Image (tube, rainbow, N blue to C red; front, side, top):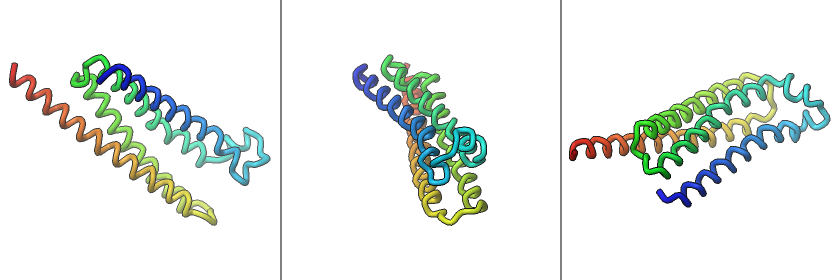
Length: 155
């Protein structure tokens, strides 16, 4: 991979991470019940918000691993064992996100709410995206493993 393409993709990953962090910090203030609440009331009295912050940790860790993986590819080490570990870690993070979202959906269904449709839809969208990422990482792992086996067979 050329360094310019790697830098561009790293910048995209940074923008996605900054955007997600900004959304996590900004969105609770826009919610109707939190319009005039203090930051303490917003962040300390809502267990679902605390759960959302904990559940976002695998997302940010996967972004970090993607950043590292792009660095490996830019250096020409895209088929190294470290790159394989980064792919595997991203896949595990995607699976953890699916688990967190499934548990969050249970939390939404069991909690008092007059409008569950929005939360359920967001959960479905996040789950589909995480499944796509996990599948892609598994395919990249397999193709990388096959390339390393072919390389070791020829030498």
